[in-house]
Length: 229
Image 1 (tube, one colour):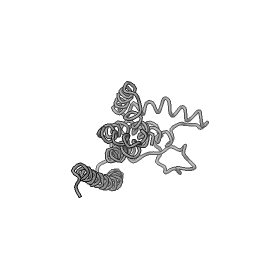
Image 2 (image 1 turned 180 degrees about the horizontal axis):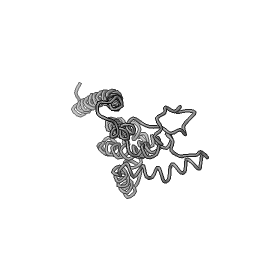
Image 3 (image 1 turned 60 degrees about the horizontal axis):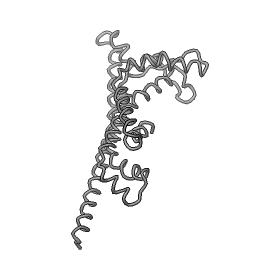
Image 4 (image 1 turned 30 degrees about the horizontal axis):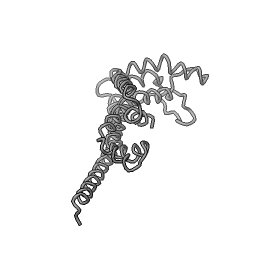
């Protein structure tokens, strides 16, 4: 919601000067290496969580979740903004001409047309979160436990990617430990496929529906223009 709201503000609401500034800032943030985000998490976020919640250490899975959200936002905002800006202006003009407000035009016209691009942005954001290693490795404490995400949000964790990155270089070839790390990689790959396939199917369905509606609208306008029965 935050990423989509920011994209809508940049593409549809903000004045041109502010829009250009925010778009440039988002593109810069999307290109920052993950180790920089991890350093920010260690210096700022972990210390804030430790002091604010009065806990011994800020290396928690809560820190990792916040860092991942911060890292995914620029990608989602940038791609969503491009998709919204790509909607032809005549759709907006037609909606405003029949009495719709600007907000109604955004919700009822612009967003449905750009939905496939927005879904692509979400896929890219989720993909970055799933494959992220360095930033998470730096802020979560890397304890090999499974925490309760409701009652124990301040425990340290070790993610799948962090486990592979930390332990792969220390395991002997052919050992059970090394095979377990390869199994973790396969699990991560299967999770990515499981998340992406339904979204791709939804995108294809949306594109098909939008195309059919566009063709029907064109035929209706053609019929009106030439007074066909």
